[in-house]
Image (cartoon, rainbow, N blue to C red; front, side):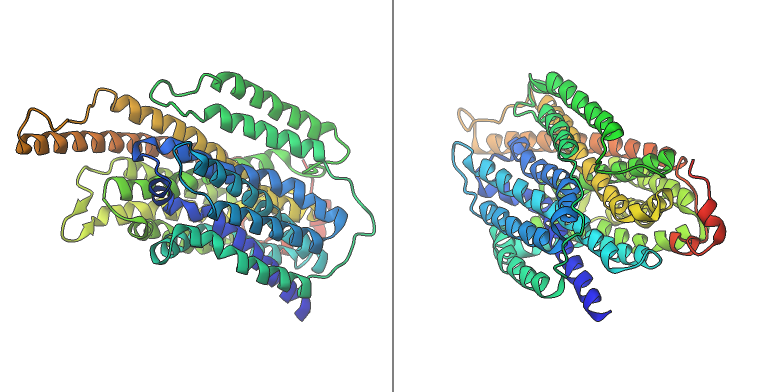
Amino acid sequence: MTRRRIAIGVGGAVVLLAALDAYVVATILVTIVRDLGIPINRLERVTPVVTGFLLGYVAGMPLLGRLSDRFGRRPVIQACLAAFAVGSAVTACAQGSQWGDGIVTLTAGRFVQGLAGGALLPVTMALAADLWEERRRPVVLGAVGSAQELGSAVGPLYGAAVAAVVDWRAIFWLNLPLTALAMAAVHVSVPDERPRERPGVDVTGGVLLALGLALIVVGVYNPQPEESALPPWGLPLLAAGAAVVVAFVLWEVRARVRLLDLAGTRRGPLFATLGVSLLSGAALMVTLVDVQLVAQTLLDEDALGGALILARFLAALLVAAFLGGVAAWRFGERAVLAAGMAVAAAGYALIATWPEGLRDAAYGPLPRMDADLAVAGLGLGLVIAPVSSAVLRAVPAAQYGVASAAVVVARMMGMLLGVAALSAWGFHRFHALTADLRPPLPFLMSRQEFARRLAEYQEAVRDALRTEYQEIFWITAGLCLLGAVLALAVRDGAGPSPRSRESRPEAAVEPQG
């Protein structure tokens, strides 16, 4: 009993390590941009740093997670940790140059980190399935999932704190000793049990999913947003990406070995639940990135100051994550999911209407910012627990580990597609709003006149940024409202949890429609 608890504790720790790095750059993007010598008005160049990690994470989670079924949990965890360390070292070595090599190196390192880190969650959940019987498994899976959620709350603050005290590269150098310790702990605690049977791995499905998402992400990445919302290759790649995603779905329907076996599942409620997870992920990533940008570009905060503003949202998210579990037990998942997404939509609508005077010179950000961010965090936090329990209600017990990982895959896909699409739109709108602006030149005018015109130019740029952020938050509010509607199709489950349902005789003959 003690050894398996240590093993799953170590597994949860490595999940937390990867989750921290999934969110750590949210508060240091502007710091990285400045250090690599990228102009602040060319933030679109750093978008691949965010999307690269998320793409690797989504691609690695289902495919590499399945490899542990074939080769064992311990060797796959060890290999992923080693690759994670390599990716961290490559990221830390990124240097600025006039050819943009720093961004290429940074993106490559983050992609490797994401690819390796994405596999740690499903492998750890599979380890839980190995060590615990079905009756107690949901509780253990919930604990592992909590490590993933903790990373989303602590990661941005951790990144800002380390960058403020040392340097942003120290965040990734620290991963090397942490990974070494984790590998030693895994070697000692995780059983080295090889599977008696060597199940097949759906390599084709994994490649199709990764390729489809990659084509979509590249299709919306526009290095010249001042000319159009999409790059010249945008529409062809988006069409190709959609075609590949359709091919992935068709393959999963007919393949003998699948990434997610839907046999015996309630497909309508399952897809509705995963849709809510996807939309909540998009809203979460927009918040982590854009609130930090608001703080640093409109409120003149540094990375740590921006992280402290974001902490209002993150604190509410953590508190609501606990309340959401209690509320789902009392009122059912469907009601809590719909209410949470509706509250989040209201929060983002409030954020989208932030006035020009967001800051008091003496007291800092105004209390309204705190309240609005707390409302948005409360709404998204309420969704965390019921979306996981709703998925467990929609699948057989044998699919608990895969289904729990699918919730995170859906959320990460929402984060990936959300930040890619909204960044493309936001950068295009900013360049459109500033197309007629020209910075004044200190020639043929007095110093006072130059100072006045420069101040007017800077205020016009800030107005354009404010408009861009408002539009993005309005779109986010709409996504959350869509999630509230989608939540109405989730299968309700007030009262007993999946664990207690298994003990009832009627649960065995419950229809699987």
